[in-house]
Image (cartoon, rainbow, N blue to C red; front, side):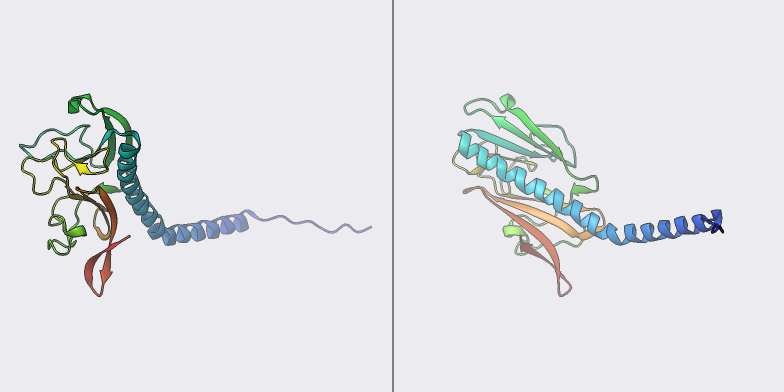
Amino acid sequence: MVHGKSRGFSLVEAIVVVGIGMVVAAISLMCLQPAIRDARTNAAYDIALMQTRNARERAIENREQFVVCFGIAPPAGAATPLGAPDAQSIQVFQWPAGTAISSAVQITTIELPFDIQFQTPSGIPTSPSATPDGFGTGNVALDFDIGVAGGIQSQVAFMPDGSARDTNGNFNNGVLYLARSGDVYSTRAVSVFGASGRIRGWRLVNSSGTATWIQQ
């Protein structure tokens, strides 16, 4: 009987196959990078929006006060906010009614994805008529307590009636911005209307060459 000869891959052939596989994987990864970056941006936006909305809902349901702190320290001369300054964190505190703000208890801390921060990239609209809900001028990443002297721009408190106020009891209108550095159209925003506590999400888009906010 004649036995057929069996032949495996040579070392050169194996190296060629592995090399081709690595090239295909590298190209695929490069093509997926924009989608991966967009996913992180959307995740950061969802975190900011949902943490803010959840704090308001809990304030209504539990008949308590909840304070949301968006990590950047206040401007010079302003009161010190709760929590520690961190350009990528969102901290939520439960503040028992009738107690001093120092009695507030931190219940959650959530970090944004590593490449997303609270910031206002160059190129976003700065006209008051073109900002989300017409709040602020688009020059401050965390712009709460708009129009309130000495207010803390980086935090908002939700009351049992659903309204958004500062820790001094003033209605607290404001907006926050988050983005990836160097990418203006990665910018997202969340606005809060003090009297009702209404919360809206926004996305910056290129509309015929003009940076424009659209509600999400």
